[in-house]
Length: 424
Image (cartoon, rainbow, N blue to C red; front, side):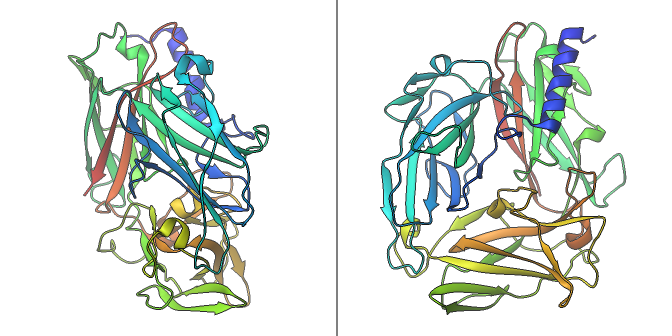
């Protein structure tokens, strides 16, 4: 089969837009906070911890979006919904085409913190709701702004709505095009679209893959390796090889008084709690870490309270990674959902020449967190975990697979399937 020129141009634009990412403040939409006074932005299906932000079109599901404002003065926060292309740039649709009801509203559900040293207000709202029904599948960005000033949003929360019209199956193996049972994982994916009438599937379907919610190494699959009847198969392709990495490190400071491995001590100073982490050693020369993780996510929790939403305290958590010399050809980052998987100033670590190590201090809400240390070389946009975490084909990872469909002449990308493949 031959891809026509129009389709090839569109796929090239998709690939470029994933790399260049130009939408909000020069970047594609992603879940992140812009205001330093905001913390703990979460997007959860029906408010369930560790759920991924995907809901089925026309179902009773909703995503609950919540965040904290480190203040005791209630503010007027508003939200509005933007439909996005597969690359998270805004689509050309008007809100009347993808929303029934109001595409914006005021956030009226909030609670003041109780029994905490840090004063904050916990805000939450759900989408869709009784005033808003989503009519189309695809990616959605929810802009949050104070006093309706959407030219200067304080946060963005992203979620996706899928139509269960196709299905995704897959597997992860250590047998890759680069090596056998080494540091890489090879994905094999099969998409079954037999439930749809698609005139030109080679030109109208494409797939994206994310590892543990990371954007830096997200892949876009333009063409399958081969086809079967109403099926696309992606197999033995270089574009589906990922570093296996390692199991995430974990820390739990849901209690002020009792804590386990990874924490040296917790103390209060000037009415502020501090969590001094045990120095983290490099795992680069070790085997894969044993034990369970939650693929980089976190759960807000407090052991000596009833509602973590407004009774969990905020603490300064001090991460410390000893290294004899700084890595001058690139930057070291803390990674995981605790920093929204961002590779910027919020997650970049500083080097302490006197004590010889990298450090970063984060103001986090009580709970359990996953994290790792990554490295980005100058000139690269993709992070590697090898220098501090090692990389192993046996690592348990989560791969989110999205299948998009845009027929000829259509103005938006439909999300016709969503699936999760686990490396176990």
